[in-house]
Image (cartoon, rainbow, N blue to C red; front, side, top):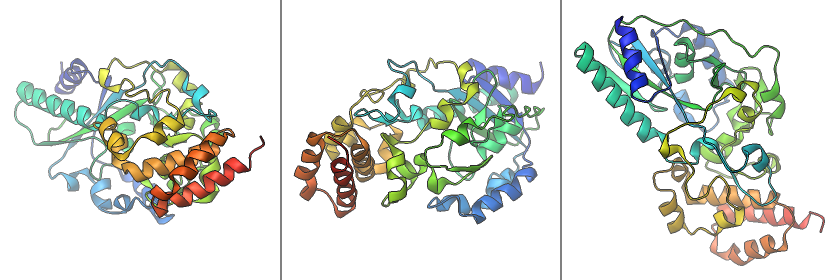
Length: 348
């Protein structure tokens, strides 16, 4: 068994569903990334435009890096109700599947650290650093190069036998390892993800304008959500999975066995009004250990208020929004004004 084969075996034993290895050369992605930034498709995510050289050259982020070990960790859970049936539901909220359970960052980082420790025990000391959706790392490009999958037209990584419902993580190391071959792109002529996007954020194959993306608008965007996108947001109060839900390859996705990824606080089947009624203290308490907590209570309320405006006509919604109006910040009030107008404009 080669060193690379041994490392992959260790990763699988620790609970990762796939391990791939690649080098640090990302030259084919340099022009695409530079143009994506030039088009301002990153929106308010200023960190995407910083440390670009370190993002495109792993050895500049972590000195002496020669190989990158990439991992896949599945997160899809078996739910009581199909997520497709929850989309644009008249009174239930939709939360992106990856955020239903505990925040994956801590779990992934802890497991990657354990992975690195095991590698050192078996193969001797090494220089390394672990990453999971952190620091300037071009993780999708690295994952594709390592054979974890191919990058689909919606920009997510796809696998023929496992779809796209998984997290990515990396270990930058100074070890010289055998590298894997990339997987052929199997999107073909399919445009399902492009066609279904509520806000037309996938402006062309492999080009996503984050400023139009509901995931960006409800998570990364911290100011008022542009009026032009509010109706399209529907009941999506945190993230958006539409492009993944329609992808043919996700028919083959497997459910995760990770307990931490199971839905918490009923987020897979919770009413918009129940979410709206949470006080800030309740939000902070319930969302402890959740990725959702990072957006803060104000953005949480902003998203829910928009969804309430999009909900089926219900005089109770209008009454509640008006009763609470004076207690909200001006930031929220602007969205409440819109939501009330939307409710009033619906037929009885």
